[in-house]
Every structure is written in C-alpha cells, then in structure tokens.
Image 1 (cartoon, rainbow, N blue to C red):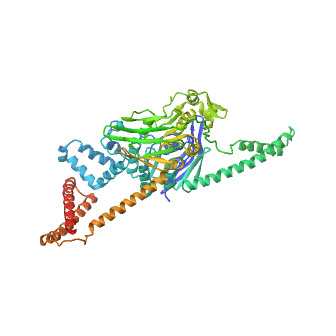
Image 2 (cartoon, rainbow, N blue to C red):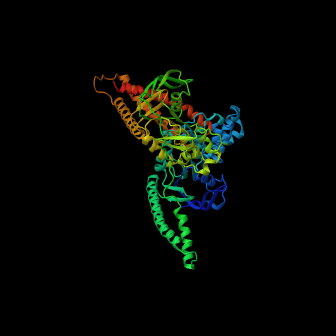
Image 3 (spheres, helix red, strand yellow):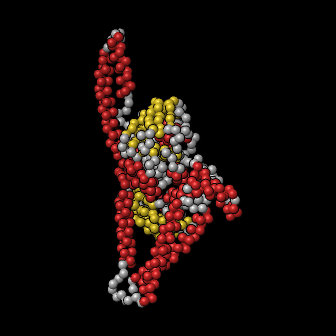
Length: 623
C-alpha cells in the first residue's frame, strides 16, 4: 500500500504538561482509522498537528507528494458575510473556484450572458464537467439539511456551520479525509447517510468520533492514546474493545507480579547493612526502577457517578394538549402525554422538528401557545443542555463547583468536599486548579455533567449529552442511567447510547406529528424498515393492479377508441425515447448553457404530456 502519512518521534507539550512522548504512526492508502482516548488525552490536538494547525516540540511528519487533504475542524469558521454557496466554494479546489466564478457572474444579472468572460467560464465549466460537481455539491448540502444556498453564514447555527464544513470536506474529493467529530450536529438520518456515503467511497480516513455504531461500521483500525503513547488495533470498535480488555488484564497481571517482587525486594532493602558491595548496588538500582513501575495505577481512573437523587412522588408530569408553533412551522398540536414514574424516554427526529423545544417547554424555558404542563410537587429537574457550557473561562474548575456547593450529599450519611467530588470525575488536583479556558471541549462537558448531578435531581433531562464526551465517560453514564431510580428524558442522535438507556421513544416527524414508539432506537429502525418494505410492496401491488386490464364487465372498445389506443402506444414510446435522450444529454455534462436551458424547457413540457397520455392509455385499457 502507498504510504500517505508518516509520524516519527512526535512529542507535544502544553506548558509543563506532556501530551505525547516520542510516538510514531503510519497511515496508508485505503485505511480507515479512528482515534479514541479519554477527554484531554490529545485526540483533537493530534489531528490539528497533522493538519498543520498546531506546533509540536519534536518529531517528523511526512506526507506523500501532492497528497490532497480535507480537514473537518471541530469548530469550523467562515467569514460571516459569505453566503452558503460562497463558503462552500471557498475551499482551495479548482472545481469549487470555477463554480464560484460562475455563480458570481450569474449574480450580476442577464446582461452578463453576452460577455466574453461569461462565455469563457461556460466553456471551462463544460470542459471540466463542473455541472455535475455543482449538482453533487447541492445534493450533499441538501442531504445535510442545508437548502438555502443564499443564506448568510453569519445567520447559521453552530450545527449548520458544522454540516456546511462537512459537506465542503466531502465534495473536495481528497485523497485523505480527516474528520473531527463528524456526527456531532447530525440527526439519525444524516448519520446513517454519512455511514453509507463513506462506506461506498474509496477515501482514506482518519477521524475522531465517540459514535460507537459509526466506529464499528466505518472504521477498520483503531488507534488509542493512553499514557502518552499510541496503541494500534487492526479491527473495528468491537475488536478494539476485546483487545483493549486483554491489554488491561495483561498490564494488571504484570503489575501484580511486580508488586509481589517489590515486597520481597523491599524486605531485602530493609535487612541489608548500610555498607553494600558492587553487586548489591546493582540490585538497589533495580529496586528503584521496580518501585517506579509499581506506582503505576493497576486500573484506569473511572468517573464514578454515585450521587443521591431526591425523593420522587408518584405524580410526574402531564402534558395537557400542548400547541406550539414558530410562524408557520408547527412543533406540537394538541399534544397530550402522561409521564409515569421510572420512565426512561428517548426523543429522536430530524433536526428542526422540535425535540429541544419540547424539552424547553417542559422545563418552562419556552411558553406554549396553548395548553399546559402539570408537574408533580416532588419533581426536581436536572437539565444537561447543549447550551449549558456557559462557564466563566477565567474561573478555576474548583471554584465552578464551590459556587454551587462546598459539600455534596451522596446519601447514606456520606458527604464529599467539592475537591473530592471533582476527583470522582477524573479532575486531578492540578486540573481542578486550572482555569476553565484550559479544558478541552470534552472536559467542559464532563464538568457540566458534574454540576448537574451534584444537585441531586430526581428527573434528568439530557439534551445531546453524548457530544464531546469520551467513550469511557459515556459507558459509565449509561451504566448510571440504567440504575438511576428517577426519571429520564434523553434527546440524542447517539444510537448506541439510546439503545442502552431508553425503554421507549417519542419520534418527532415534523409538522407537529409525534409518534410514541414502545422500544429503543434499534427496535424503531427495524420497525421503520419493515414499514417501508410493506409500503413498497403495497405500491407495487397497486401499480400492478392498475396496469393489468380487468376482464370482468369489460365492454368492447369502439373503432375510434381502438385507433386511439394504438396511437397512444406509439406516442408514449416516442415520448419515452425522447425523455431518455434528454436524460442522457443532461448526464453527459457537454451541454452549453443555451442547450441546457432549451432541453430543460422541453423536459418540463414533455413530462406532463407523457403523464396525460399514460393516464388515457390506462383508461382505455381498463374498458
């Protein structure tokens, strides 16, 4: 295989903190590699170093000559005054630049059609087959729910910006595609589309993602950053879990043997006289090396989510015929639901269908147009939101927690100080005294989760809790929620997380249509696929029934109707042939602008004419 990327002896520090030391890796053509690690271990930093966005202390990074690279940044930016299409065409790509010139000329009005510059651009568009490229670009944007190509970038949400940047990376046709959290801000349908798109492509991939189904279905190799080193596993996420467990067991066994030896050597050290010979000195040196080894932790630190929840009565909440719209966009209409004690509900649906709005209505952050929520007196909400990371960056981590409480009640008479509580969430004493701005995105998410749980809620409302949390934290959060005695509502696009946590779904389908489905996401996906198959079979059956002339009660066609039927068959065949020829012309990419316009106009005339003749043929066939 052709080597695309080689990293040799890479060392990276942040101040005094060592991120990695003397690490090496290679990426070859066709490989699909994911990087996994705990938050703060340097996943995004490694991608930024490879992309040339961050410096490093030592090492050598070598790329194949003329390698085309596209990088999806975790937080992409574009000039606010750009339109979506201008931003899309802003990548350093010959085809994108050509389309940008074409679109800029069109914006000048009809007079530009007669200019030499416009004719030159048309010639270049034809030569490079840029019409196909532009159409494919708009198809990808549409798949990612970006349909207003003239919208200003400054008006886009963070999620829309991320999806625009993802579309840019995909359409640039790179040799190497680097993706940092590509599924963040994608709804379930978009994530499944992206999985299919990447699996059909021949792209070489290097990515960071916490979506475990995505890892399993797209990636063929896993690189883990652990203890400032890189470990490579040649398999998907399921294979990695198996081998990672074996490595942990082997490491713990080695440390156990080292501990046994250390106890013997420690006893020897205590019994030896002060004056020792050369042979004894060598043994003493080995003892101190062994001592350094046994000081390593035998197991990884874990986020322990053992917190008390307040008492919760039998009455939870009742949504009483809620209506909510934003202009002409309907979110809920006469929605009624009675929530039961112990429920763990998942909320899914396409972006913009009202999932987060429903949560905000429940919490009183948004007012319904009509209807009301009747909430039980004992309900104490804990809200983990997409917008909940609004910490003061100049505060220390420990002070963020102390502002809420100096001590945290864990139940059973057990209490922890703010510092002890943060330690349970893998915040070391050094990190606790760091300023918030020094935390990674995932560490800020973990801090937000900490501040929600420490208030002892009995009803957790989690809006996209999985974005930016590392896999270790996700697994433990899932375990915690499975045993949580209170109620849970989760809005998430993480299919793995939903499968483990929820017992039923509210599916938001848009235009105030909400389906209550009894099962997890995989159950719902299977149900949806079966429904789609059934609809396809029914449609096929209907078409067959219409196409087959009925023999019952048939009257004989008149002579005129017989002649009309024969002529219709000839006309339909001619129109079908013309339609096929037009479609072939469009696909060729060789049409000039005038030819394209003329043939498009003819297609618009042809389709209704063909429909009309086919309907008449069916009418006569059934007589």
